[in-house]
Length: 173
Image (cartoon, rainbow, N blue to C red; front, side, top):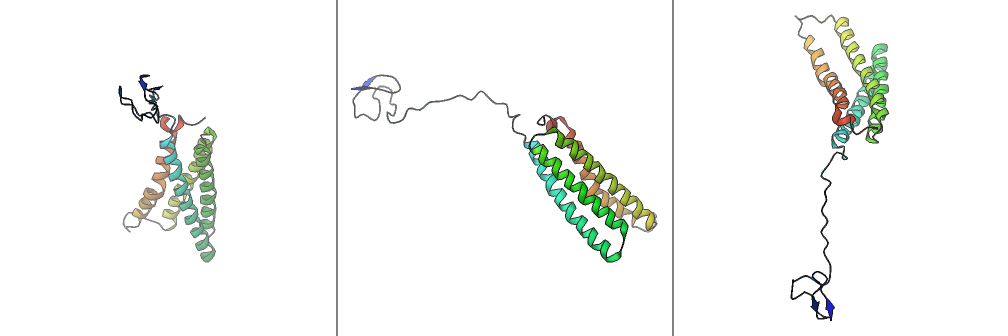
């Protein structure tokens, strides 16, 4: 005779189930209650931001290489300088994002510096583009500056703000 693994009732040696409680005698099931319902250790918000930042920065590097190509063809130093600044700022934002994925607060500071450089360079490029081609409200091309800012500048500003929100910063040390 042996005892049930669940209720300790005496049962036959060959019994697979207890006649008293019905428990399977092959495996004892242990239920563990998980009291940790706090999901603050999972930085999903930060991971998504960093992943999007890396993708966007790689796109900006590709765009900057295109600027470099056109600068070589047109011999326009302004485009070349802007392309180099975009490449450097994008590399800096990638480094910052990778450090933030490692939960380093230093990554936020590095990201912020290079993102501000990118935003200022973009703003300067739009300003000089408008002055260079004398864009006036009557020629219809002034909307092009708004499109450039909407697609490139606005996301950069939004991401900069999102990184500085408490939801992202609370995961960084």
